[in-house]
Length: 180
Image (tube, rainbow, N blue to C red; front, side, top):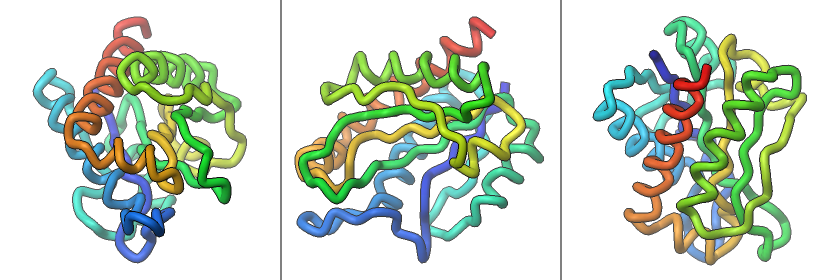
């Protein structure tokens, strides 16, 4: 099995930034993906990444990496944002026309929900997330909290929380692949 991991944003695209704490989404997503890659590798799963350092990678190139590698699964990691600083929690997205994507999202989301104590915003279908629409395998986008919520960012700044998230996503990947 080959899993393509996508650390959202990067380089000139910081993603959302927590103004109070000065933490950019691109840095947290890269840390989570690095831990997730290492966790999957330890479990014998081959991994390709769309970026492994702070560079900008266009959305089309992210899809090309996954599709060219003939990845079996695609996971894009993000941290949500909202104009309302009280917004918090986790959610997992899949492409609306992908039944396998929906099953994959539910499997991963269930594992994250079990280890990350925050509001469960659920599994959601998207028509428009580019990386979900243009990858050729079951694909999900995991929102690991809100960068605009100081409490979420404080949690996501803890190595233990990031390790738990990476382990939970890995467990969801393995759970889904065993049922497919």
